[in-house]
Amino acid sequence: MTGFEFPVDHLLPSHKVGIISLVGLAVAIVARYGVHLAGAWRTVYIVCAAIALYLNVFVGVVQAFLKVSVLKAMAPKQTEPPFVIVQLVVLALFLLLTIAAVKRFRGAPVLQA
Image 1 (spheres, rainbow, N blue to C red):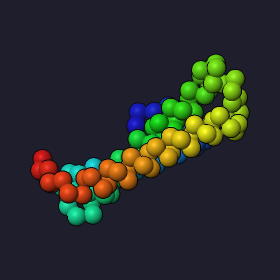
Image 2: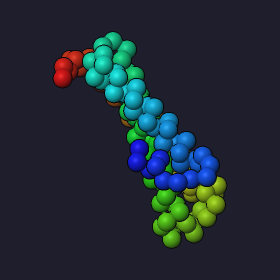
Image 3: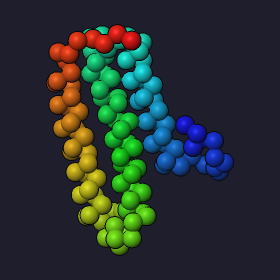
Image 4: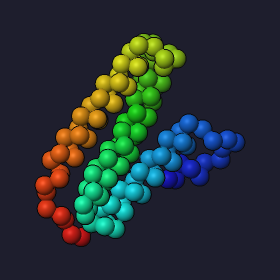
């Protein structure tokens, strides 16, 4: 959240990703601590936490393709196939792991803080 304090002239894509991530984390916090993962809130918690983590990994991949010279040479505009393939693999991995987590977490006992 501290990154939002930097002076900027307009809303950047990084700000939009950060806002979406913070909203997802806020909902996850409500699901975990507000309603103690009761009922459907278990699924809400997992999905929101996974989305927030995916967005961080998405930005990490973008930064890697911007900063690592080998990756930058492979996809200088970040529209080339290597970049797109990596982002699709990361997305698919997160989808599979999120689905697996939702299925496994359903039967777990409710944790009280």
